[in-house]
Image (cartoon, rainbow, N blue to C red; front, side, top):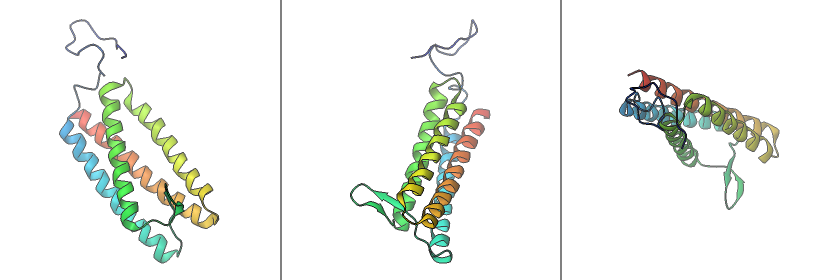
Length: 157
């Protein structure tokens, strides 16, 4: 466990993040829940626009079948779970790391690159891969921004 420097007479316990005491947990998780609701709404809207207006399938990955065409419900479940994981990751970083937003930025950027590459290389049709990658980036940016805003607002309280 890392030990952080602190001023003499500080009330913070050794080995904890400088941000751990300042976090309003209720406000943080409320913000993450709102972020999940917005991400799910964008996923449903994006899924319907891609399927009905652009007449292009959205790609998904199955453990058993490889590249598949997911249902709206399956896509929404993955988006909600991903948002929860992003919120949990941000919470762990705020509670235990000296620069949580920097670490979260790197993790989210690498995750977005991974989802784009997965969509592009998994598809035989370039248009389908590009549309799926674009939708994944849009949802990922909403989750990224929502988690950062929830953490910053919860730290100010």
